[in-house]
Image (cartoon, rainbow, N blue to C red):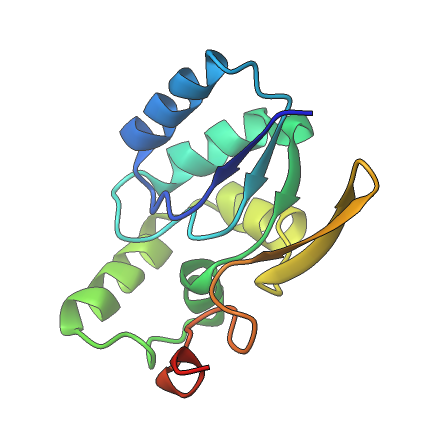
Length: 141
């Protein structure tokens, strides 16, 4: 099975479309999404809709720190006013359908394990000790 791992799209529809077009050449069977599908970019609903339209091709879809912050309404880990402002912008434009998809069709843990061809794989958005924000305590491990 050929897999493509996608992460940190950040609502950039053009980039996601380019990635999907590029991997067509490799005849990818399934996709893994390691979070940060939304936030920062201007087209979160379109990005979610594209992933949703391919839902049967994704074997893993986990939240990143931007899904977590958006749905938890938690800006405390953002270090800049710009980061906090764009999170509020994203919250304001996300459709109910997009929110429901993120809540109900993506794993909110930021980490999961999966068996592929008899081998166990661990998928993490950040790092093991902190799958969302990789705080400085864990960066030295």
